[in-house]
Image (cartoon, rainbow, N blue to C red):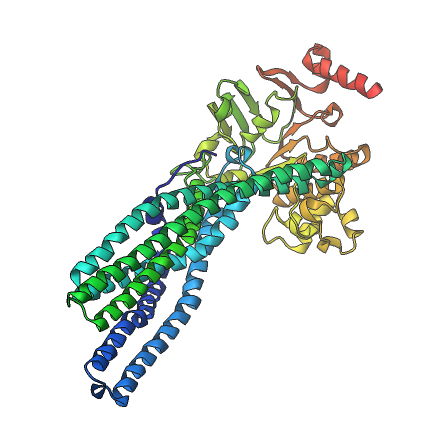
Length: 589
């Protein structure tokens, strides 16, 4: 996956549309943010008013006046508390909804990406992007508009009020703010970079943990627990090193802002004292001035503290858009043809294929092949000869580099993916069962299938007997990746899934090669029932499983080098006969 750097303003501009659905909530949230600022803005003026009255003579003060000021402050504080409740509750929910929307959009996008993308991407990295990377988006989406709105409001109002008290002193104080921004921005950029590296390393740790835990049986069989722990510790240590660097930049950032805090207070003390000596500012005014500067510094400090959260959020958003910017290389054409009921004719016309990252090494070259509807065709040949690739071109898991693949005369690139793949069933060697029940895994082949339909599919696949013997029958939990079932049982469930789908075209990719003899015999019977009346392509290493095929194709990197029935190919004495001899001698040995 190619990494890219996206500018902050570009990210904000691209993130902003996620607020569109919640603009009413956002407007109320910002209104409440403004209301929470009232107390901080008005309090110094109240203190200044009382101080000026007291300095003019205590007689000008009265209990009623003090109570009126206190009542006004109490009303403002009640408004502040109510507004804060709305921001903390509804505002956070808005952020969570935006995070949910982004996660949904990302998952939909991932579902549309092709095998090429997944071949070069670690699942652990994707898990980090769809989960932990977006956790901080909730806080970012909620607090980012609030914090900058409050800061902008307080700084602008404070500037106007302070200018009304003493313009030269105000200009001196506010000249420090741009210097603080410039100095802090360098540390901010460095923090952003370390946050991104930290996220990437978390993804690497996730990937390593996932790989180790999914392969725990292999780990234990090779007593490799120590090696796995060592690998994990290396990744974990790398994460700690990045985190340390991140905290160094964060410490420098915080120290810089605190230094500028002190500089601003020093300016107010020295400048305010000198202006008071000259009579340009009164004691009550200076008191209010210091309170406003305190409010201003508290606002800046709040923005500084938010900077870490801001950078975390921006990092998550950046990594989000890195995935969203990847365009699927396999997608529907602009005006796709919807494939209805088909016969099952398949044509390969001058087909060539090479992977995008290795175009100089073709996997298939100039393949011409016509498969009749209902014909049972077997593919054999050396590993790397292109058998699986040839099958993968039919449902458009990959696109041809040259030539075309046609189903019933339609170039598959002109068809909608859904209608094309609805006509094709795939049974693979590496069966994947989802964590759930047997019923749910079989019904995956036909959403909304009834119990009777699922049971009938299981009977056809030769799976009903062993399912009925399980503790809860079709409601038995299979475990993650079907870990509670044997290889033969998982394979029969996958066949039942295809029986339920009932497609006219069937692709069998070494469906029995990993099974023991007894399981292979049962599964082979199921596959024979499944393939009746369907156009079937079978990839096999065990030639005994394909001897009854209507036609056998021998593939290598030069294309189809031989074809015919089992007996015809043996009589030719070519590649197939050699393969048959090698396999027979291996079996005898």
